[in-house]
Image (cartoon, rainbow, N blue to C red):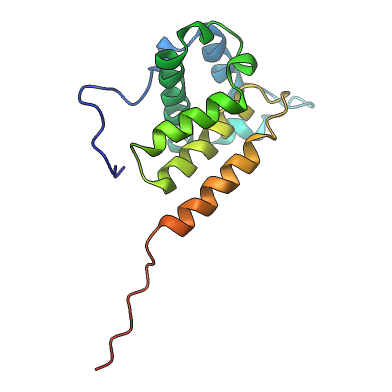
Length: 151
């Protein structure tokens, strides 16, 4: 991952899964062992390991940010600690460390993690945030086309 500003030295990108709050660990593991209504494997169980790792990394970075900015929030349930204001602040802080495209990807993967771990909750408020970040990332990224230079 390319960063605009070097990360703070010695700082890890996120919490190890073993360091996550107990509820988060249980929800994460349950997401990949769940079965569907008719006893079939849930489609999310079939996510490839690299995809699972990417989603877990983004969620782990979110938890690290929560621990650093509001340590009292970690023991609370996932749905209480994850709100629009906190996520927006997190993504703004992240924008100071990485490119706009990486921020958009982190937002999308955070939403994926939340939907996997607490599927019954309404996470629809994340969609406009992700769309706005993606629009900004497209407009902020330099054009891949080279200028036409006549011979």
